Image (cartoon, rainbow, N blue to C red):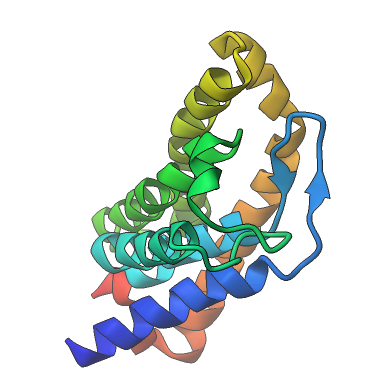
Length: 181
């Protein structure tokens, strides 16, 4: 139990640290950041429950006012920003990625890690993200989805990185890959 709490906190800190990488702001008002890589890794490494908890902890700390999002953003004002759906979707995305990792125990870790990251960290994350963007920006769902197209290539690269990092962790320290236990 204590180990789980430490790992949840550590991965919440990882998401925050990935926000230190300079963001690139697009015209949609949603920045390109490395934080979604952290969300993917929460799920692929920690599994569904712990990964979702790590992402939820990060979200709660951010909404409490800590400037943990890329560019030093934090606070309840984020709930009125174009990124609201992505922020809300972080725990869902990590949970989904972890759930997939846990369900495909016998398959190749690299392949499952990439697949889990694509499903959780892109598809599941984009659903509330696009809904939130549509609502805040007053755009149709299809218009909001079009605004997301520039992000897909980068997110696919992050999904591949998450798969390779997950595989490397498994090779170096298999007992740390909690999504496989």
